[in-house]
Image (tube, rainbow, N blue to C red):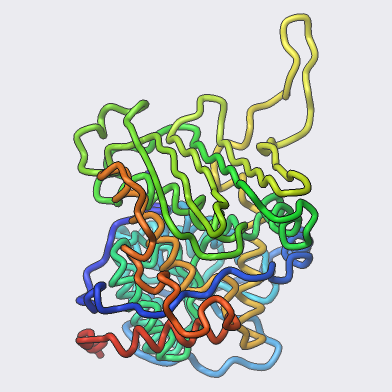
Length: 450
């Protein structure tokens, strides 16, 4: 199993968490350009230009991006050649406003070379840093194993290149905060790949809440079940089910509620794969239930499991004071079979996230490319990644100690103590959050090597 969404942490020396945060992070706020996100996926299916390309291996270089001509697509370098890297490569090649010009980051040069040849990419390198340093690259897509994310973010930011990073930014909160802060200081965009926010089904639930169709939200329920458990090697060192799986659902609960959470209660067990039962903490869980408490008693209940024999299962439900909105699981088609022994769907649900979330991957790609061109904030910011990770850490602590864990225990910025608090505009809350981080820094990271 390629390390597609692996959650292994990196190793930069960062600020102490206890002194780090004194201001709230922005709440998700209004749905961002929801109609274009839903409708743009069809527009992305455009033919790839079949121009002959001469492949060349990368030579070491250190350079800020060379100027891009007006009207030319954003030039993208992809770091990481596992399954999620290929998902993003397939998505980017459908986007007329982006062009993949470099790919790399693999232990096997023949893997990188084969991908470059297959997809017609002129520049490739075994070393991921060479892709980031390539002067022809404007924006970097980080799809590598998670232990490399923080260092790669820092290198790209130092060179002034916008960054799209697969979750997580890092598995440790201090390191995540430092990465977000560094990117902001360097004036580059950092988008975290929480692609479910761009899924047409979840976005319809969000719009029903935002438009008042269901009244005030009371309860949210989220179900996330994988078709089969990953191997032990994937789970080991990845931070456990809350960080490597439920983090998407935790973020979705916050996205749908439109505000920061207050407390988390979680419980976990090993029901499916006994091979992982001896791993530490949440890594030993393949099944978990989480309750997230929001203001005024609103709750979100999340159930996750690493195996559902009937296929990949992704559902959402929001109950409001006036109505309810819910999504069904998605199938490749709507055909149903009626026999004397069976009545139901003709085929199983989608087999995994690569096929289930195609439209979401396309929409988030377009959204980030548009933000680069328009100079707007990234649609899903590094700060969103910080809170999602904090929620996952809180869930792990709750499962370990069997108690409610306040988010302010993990992320003091969520204690609501900042002057103005949630009443501040999103941009002002981001600025205050980052200023508080900057004031708390106690050490500087090592300089970027030339």
